[in-house]
Each structure stands twice: as C-alpha cells, then as structure tokens.
Length: 612
Image 1 (cartoon, one colour):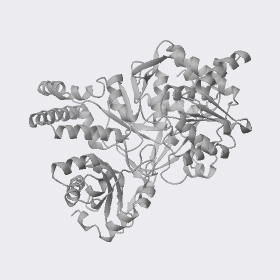
Image 2: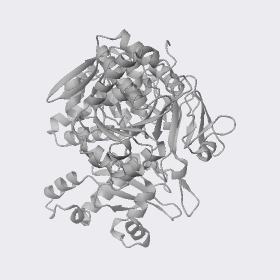
Image 3: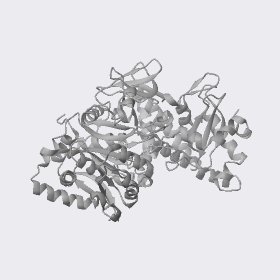
C-alpha cells in the first residue's frame, strides 16, 4: 500500500489513471464520463476555493445531496483542504438536517438543489458556525435574507472559479496541500441514522478508512477492470467506503444511478461487474422474479424450476469443493442458456458478484441468487467500524452467515452473546459525546457492537439480532425478531414486517402488504374495493396473508412463531420517521404510531387474524 491517507490515495489514483474515465453520470439521456485528470482539476479548484472560505485542517463542511460525481469530488475537495466531511442524507427532514449542521459545527454546506438549499435556509439563523451555502446544481437561490453576518450563497461553478483564481494568486501547491492530512486526523463525521434518540456523530480517521480498504480488498477483489453502479446513499458508511473510496483506490469505474427508481434500467445501460445493495434491493429483485414466473405459461414455469434444480446441484458442488460430473455440467450449461443468461442480462450481463450490507440478508434469497450464478457476498459492520468487520468471499461463503473477520480485525462473543470487535478500523469516538464513546469502547479497546451473534467452528459469524431488539415473552422465552422478519418479507404479498411480543404471551406481527399485489388478487377473485383501508379489512385477503405467514413460520420453534397479525393501511416511511435512510425500521416509532393495532391484537378484538 503506497498511501497512508485518503488524500494520498486520491493523488495516486488520479496520476495512475489520469486518462481513464473513472466517473459517469447520465446527462439528458447520455452517460458522460470524467477522466482521472478531469477529476483532479475539479478537486484542486474545490480545495483552494474551500481554503479561501476558511476550511482548513479540522474544520467541518457538510454535503446534503444524493449521489453524483460532484458529491464524490466535493468529498475529496474537503479532505484535500484538510477539512472534515459531514455527510447528511438528502431524505432527512429539516429538523434532522438542522441537528446535524448545528451539532457538527459545519462552516460550509453543499446542497444538491433548491429543495435541499431550502432546508438549510430555514435553519441558518440558528446555526452560528455556518457561513457559506454552496448550491451544487448551479441554480441561483435567493439569499438576500442571508446577507447579514457576512454569510454568502454561491454556486458550485462559482466556487470552482474562486478556487482557481485563489490558487494562482497565492501560488498554492495542490499536491503538497493534499499531503498535509495525517493518518490520525478525523476524515469524516457520519451521523448514525439512530433507531432511537438523537443521532451520534461517528468520527472516522484517514487511518480507519485506509486500513479498512486494504483489509476488505483481501476478501472482495476489485480491480481497474471493474465498474460499479452507485445507488446506495453516499451519506452511509457502507457506500462511502465500499462504493466510493475502495473502487477509486483501484482505478475502477463508478456510474452514478439517476435515481432509485431507475436502478433497474441503469443496470442494463451501464453493465456493472460489481453491485452493492442493501437486503431490500435483493428482496425486491427476488420477489419480481418469482412474481413473473408465477404468471408465466406452465411450460416456462417448468423450465425455470428445472433450471433452478440444476443450479442448486451445481451450487452444492461449489460449497463442498467437489467437481461436478459431465452430465450435470451439460444440464447446467443448458439451464444457463435457457434461463440464467436471460436473468443476468436484466442486471447488465456482466455481474461478477453482488455485495450485501447494512442489514441481515435472508439465506433463502442469498441461495436463490447463487443458484442462478450471481453470488451475493454478505458482510457485516457498523458505521463505527468504518464499516467492514466480516465478509464472505467468492471461494468460501455460507448462507445465513456474514463471513469471517477481515485481516486486522479481531472478534469475540461476550458472555451475553454481544459481538465485540477490535482493530485499526474502529472509530476514534463520538463527536462531542465522551459518555457515549466510553459506553461503546471499553478500557481494553473492544468496541461493543450492540449486536448478538455467534461464531462457528470455521470462524464464520452469524448475526442473531440487535441486542436491544431481542423480545422476551411473558413466558420468559427470548425471541430474535430479525430472522422472523426476513422470512416474512419474502412472502409474495408482504412488503414490510415488524415482529412484536415483548412481555406478551405470544409473538405477533405488524404487516404492510404489497398493495399492488393485493389489488391484483382482489380483481382476480372478485373482491370489491381497491383502497388500502378496504383491502386490509377483507376477510378473504386476511386469510390469504395469514396462510403465507403460517407457511413462513414453519421452520421456527413453536414459541417463536407469529400467532396473530395486523395488516397496516400504508407503507412505513422515512417521512413519517418510521424507517431510517438505510430503510431499517425504527421499532419504537412504529410501536407508537400503531399502538391501537397492537393493543387490538393482544386484546383479542382482531380475532379473525389469529393464526393457529
């Protein structure tokens, strides 16, 4: 490894791959690329522009934007100036944006567009450290009311021009400037999305990121020949490290998806070789395939399931490390030609592997993808661990487990089952929160993850659930909700699920149905009404969903199984504060919002939703 900091890595990559197109974005229907030397020129101007605005070593600058080359280059510009990047999810409400800007003492905020700039303008008077708002799409925002206190609003292009002139006037040396950050300097503040309480600002250093990149590459090999499609939020540590810094360090190409809605189309257009996704992405792909096959003619269905059988048999040889016979090889080749190759074309046709992180992935879904020849490498980590602690690898993977520790990371299981971790990727601490830091990091340097898990004889880690999420029934039985929820969300008519039952005498579930499929079911079965509130009260629909839940619960112990359900009339959303920007359900909020439905379950007033 020839670099000690992320800024040194930036210099190395933009020199080695000066003429290669490293970033692509879609502009009015065309994918336009930026070469290494183009990126370097832009970052140089950004760096000098930020220095002219007072961003120097240790000062914070925030990015409030969805993914784009400008997000990536702004990140490098802040770091090369010696600053600290504060990443803010663009889906957050104004109140949450205000908390992060103020708590982080950010002096500059980069806002994607007028909508995001509006959030900043609303709270600017209450953020005493904030001096400059940079609008990234170059649309002029009315900032007359901000003229006081020497504050200013400028466009991204104006900042580049400012930096270009300032660098010339001051005779600044970009390479020398980029080498000023030290390995132990804080590189970023990433605020945990927080399923409870205020978010905490995780301080990650250059050393944290560099060592995590180096170790992760031993498990997940990315080369300059690879290309990725970036759609998970760069505000999150998973995409920031594995989809931004790591591929750039190898000279890989990154395409930035136009939006989450266009990911499927963008995959076909950009033909990535590696994709990062959260479990929800793989669940949706799985459900779409199963749904399409269920509606196909009988012969096509028969061919599909025959092909999957060949895929399963081939996979068994892969897992066992044995060589398949010639007859299986021939059948598998035919299965690939008739089925698998066509499915692979829907994700661009060049995928080497997928990577899953940020939440547990269903073993059923992981195996399904592997049978088609598209392995999903599941990993595990937290924002506080930069984030990777473990991953599966292409030559050694286990379904339902998150792999073994990457080099330089040590894991152990505490007496109560909590996963503890130690390594150079563990955070420096929580910003302005020494009490929370002391609670998370013990005197021996072990980080307490808050997750419950177990290590098998080969060192593979299995995650049970969050420590705080474990339910204890009134009968004293401990129940981990995550495996139950994973089993439910792959049911055909279920979109989201939350398991409940803490201090209750049985386990139940709040279920958000897939309303589009409910409407199709209602139409096919002559059921009146198409409104969500009407559909979830229909006894025939309730019984249909109950049967899916009952089947999904079959592998679990009797005390773990869902006994009753309540169908919710709408999806759980970020806007309502019910899910985090990474789509994790905020249990406490949902329990509050749907307390009447929960009490109805346990009061027995929804008797028709009991599952025997």
